[in-house]
Each structure stands twice: as C-alpha cells, then as structure tokens.
Amino acid sequence: MTIRRAASKDLAAITELYNHYIVSSPATFDLEPFAVADREAWFSGFAESGPCQLLLAEDGDNLIGFACATPLRPKAAYRRSVETTIYLAPDQVGRGTGSALYTALLDVLNEAGVHRAYSLITIPNAASVRLHEKFGYRLAGHMTECGWKFERWWDVHWYERRF
Image (tube, rainbow, N blue to C red; front, side):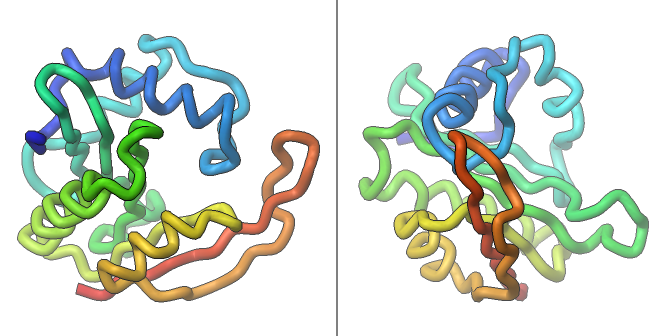
C-alpha cells in the first residue's frame, strides 16, 4: 500500500469510490452520484501544504481509499479547525487501510498547526466509530434525525479530536 497526496489524475477514481457510498450507504448525505467535472471545484480546495489535504491509499494502480481535511466552517476564526472524512473501498474495511490513511492525514494536520479535527458519523457505523476513537476522537454531540436518505431518518454523531 502506498499513501500519497492526491493529484488531478486521481479525481475520476476518487469520484467513483465516493459515488459508491452515495448510492449504497448513509455514510454521506449526498443523494445523486457526481460526474467527475462536478467534483473539480471540491478538488481545487486542497493544497500542497496547510490544513486542507486530500490523501489517498493505493495498491499498485488501484485506489483503495482516501481521507481528507476540509475547513470546518468558512469563517476566519475557524481556520485552525477542520472536518476530516475517510472513504475506503468496501473490501478494505478492517484491513488497516483506514488506520494508515488517518495516521498520515493526522500527521500532516499536526504539522499544519490544526487545533481541532471534527468528523460527522452517520449512526449506526461501528467501524467508523472504532476508527475515529482509535485516533483520539471523542463524541462531542448527537444530532437526531438530521438526514433523510433511503426512505428513513438518520442520526449523526459529531466527533472531535484535540491536537
């Protein structure tokens, strides 16, 4: 497995993996799959340095997961707080890929001077809760029935990690 910063050539594979979760899982509240062109603005928000990062894991030429950090909110006072997100190829859950990606991402965020990282987890999602708690995230809040997908309401837990 190799972990590296994502490049523009990776956007199609990243979009394909994310689209899998859009159509099959409540892990994201996006409802319609994206075309690659629709994700270009999102992709342009990542930088070579600083807190906005997009890392990917690959096995040979195959994308097996990605993790990113985006601004928590657009207001300037939030600049040292980020939201972290991770998506793995379905066959990678429980195989160490998520741990490797989060280790790399959190190291970069620490170097960038991030003060807090937050993650939203649609509940239930025991694997994501375990991964986040392994890396020091702690439950910070519970939002009830905040997302409607697959003909039902979903709760979301806010997790917070201190640096």
